[in-house]
Image (cartoon, rainbow, N blue to C red):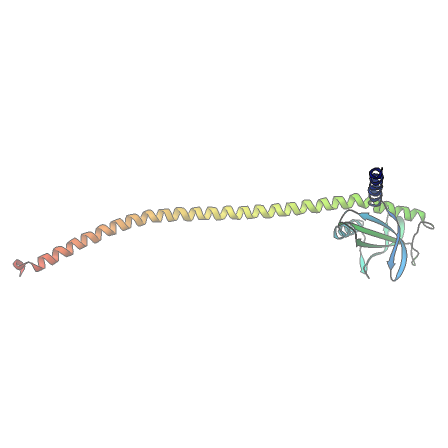
Length: 216
């Protein structure tokens, strides 16, 4: 009975974690020293990966960021997925557990009127939908980064292989040159030895002739 209870609790914990990861919820974070309403989501990607993915996605929508006090700001922008009117978007990403990250997004309709789940239901829902769509986008971004890294590593390995093959080719040429030179040296040494032997014989003959009394 105890084991069954523990199993049920484990399943509930796993289910709760699965719901939390990938599901946007209402939250808040500090913006200019004021705690403002926001939406948050937990991603199974590192803080750096989530930050790069979110920034790239917003930049592709034509938004330009400004960083202030640890909060990324996009002032007076139009992001159709959230609102057809100009808004101010504030984002912050924190490190989560087990290489995960927590992404916060707050939206102001102007003059620090931050959207919330009570007064601006549609914008708040759109922010949640946007962050939930970020899950798949970030995963795809992470895959693209991994593929790019693999392509880069493969290119590096191929260049190193080419370098090794060139070195091998040069050494083979040097080896052939050395082998040819060794054969030439063998011939030259043989001829030089024969010449020295011949000269020694001639020198010895000259000495014998010089010491012969008949030649005095």
